[in-house]
Length: 554
Image (cartoon, rainbow, N blue to C red; front, top):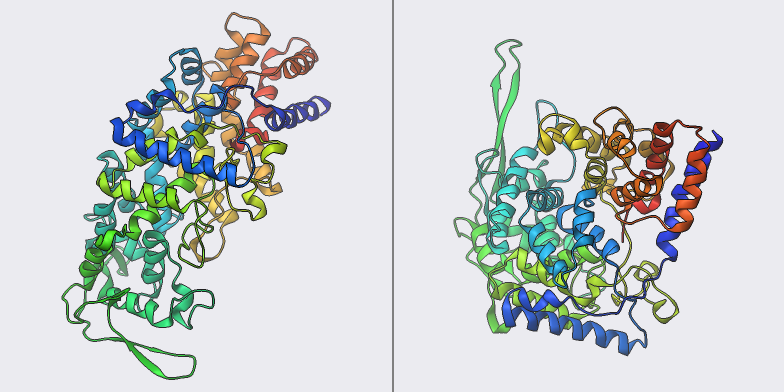
């Protein structure tokens, strides 16, 4: 017990190292910027960098130094492919002396299957949540939704086409996976209220749901606007097809589908005064004919219009959400409540990125390259007196003068544990063979920490139940196994000094080498095991995997 408590102290010390380390490297943008798309791309990045620097000057702060390669490589793996790098990947990147290696790595990650898997998980969760439907009356097919997004990101389909598919989808939930977005929002006969609210939040960055019953108290959105949007979706019908079970004789669900039903004329709603009002399908100032056969297609057409030089909201919404994914904060808080009542921290940056995103035909990979090439993305997460006011967690506008620390999403944590321990190589089936285990572990997480409105708790933030889940889970037990063929067995049995083996454990778990103090403390503890090397390295690795530094993306 004494030894275990000391290993816990090692885990805490790892977090202390994270919070106290300040790099002295120079602050500069990656030299690969000019190679990622030519002069046009460079002008976008230069504009973004110049605007964010202007924010530093306006607020009289100085940015943090540039992140070390160790810090940055872990960050970019988590953000682009949803997991930390493996030991071999870390070593390969750190050994590369090319000044262009950061840009080259981003390109490599964007072409990897893990990028597809990560972004598929993000957008499947955005559209239908994390829960896995069970039983004989499933409201939607998560597998169908996943298949749709897997194809989207594997083919790098233009985002505007993806939104149109989701908004206008109809048919069988497996044959057309996009319909599961609509099925998930129409589980109850609520007259497409949830579908209206979700669509405007997710794809327009607008929270109009509070105007369902009254005018918005802080902006110009009126109650009528919610029902005008709602009019576009009132033709949708969720059909549950059933068949008789030949064994039990009971009727059971066979599949669900989305079809269109006849709906003509306006939508009627009641004001607080009790007065009934009528709302025709209207997109801001554009009303369509109420007898249009498929109103959703008209809605989708209006989503993509770029009149009078105004960038479509679907572009701004996606840029804002993606920037938040990489930095921890978007240009607005919350990211899905954009508008005059909630000004962006860097409106010129948001507008420029959104405009360029349209010009490159909504190419998601190009947007990711722009974000990861920006100077701000290459800064360390450490900050000091010269930029201590940059604390969006305290309610301040983000200035992006340092990288904000983010807790891992649940999927990132699972996949990072697999990557840190090479557990995918120990079982059968490779990465795909871990999918069922991943789902079981994820479902346990959602059940333990879910909340209202389909917004699950998605991060590990240090609560006692979460800590116990980490410390005692079968996944951790597998991760620190010292059986022949395991990562730990290969580590402590290979030739080399204890320091070299410690380096490998720290690089595998934290993507960095241990500090001299950490080496000294761990060496003393290992000696206390009196020759039981396997147990010593097991406990060291357990401590690293349970440290706050492991679950943080910085």
